[in-house]
Image 1: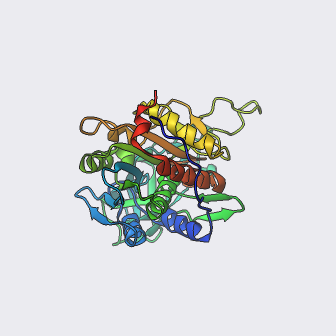
Image 2: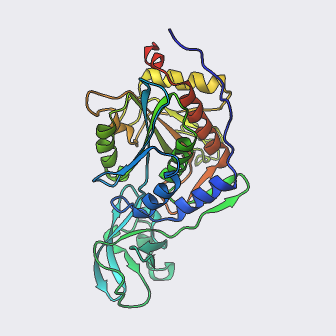
Image 3: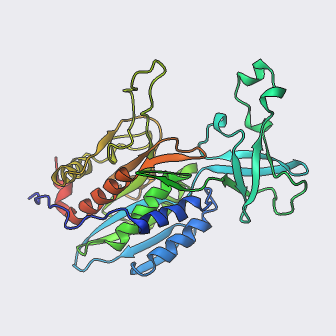
Length: 361
């Protein structure tokens, strides 16, 4: 028998505490494969609230909040700690470094950007010739990455070595109801997962997976899902909004999501067909609680769900993302309302979770 959807008993508001957390998370540097800075923050935040915490061989943080009832559903929530960035390859001249891209970054967007290299956060600029020194033909094409250099500006730098990773040097800012910063994909998901662990309902076993290396192949999620072996899983992520005016000045109606329209529920992406029972359930919870949402249109991109749903004998999985402009670039833009609604929708989902949700047709 399908249980009646209950309204959220108490919602969470995004206030100074949450804003200070996302500022700390966004400003930290954690390129895929080198997530130590975010892992440290996560461990500090969740230590008082989890019954069991461990860091696995991949570097995932796996935290369990046990249920206070027997035979509880095991519900995995995943959010990835890593971000896109750069890998130092070699020094070409004193203070100038060859590099490659880590994860999905459009090469058109990197020339002239500030970066931080390595654990010591050495400041550098991705250098390109100014307009005065380039031909019209050169300005008409994207500069290949292998022709760009990171420039520390100070000659030989003993704090930079091949193998170092670099992140965009962008500081978090709030402007009214809008936030700006780097790595909102997926620091917003990480911030939400921390809050949900703190407010986990008693009737479920919450399995929080702060995963690594999502941006280079969903690698941490694969081992995390195998270790946790959940009954169902939800992935908390950020997705690209496509809501800017089109070239002819009219509104672009071929969008994936829009900022200011609530969390985006996935039907499908390039790696996953979301479990239709979970899609229906989450939409019912949102409607009952009058939380706005949008359907993330099928298309490119993917989340940790792509690995989780194929774990062991299969895991019913659904992704829900916060829409952001300009993800995978030096700076993103998101709305606090979308963030807050995403957090409260997932909290309401957890409060309503019971085995009957898998009986939905």
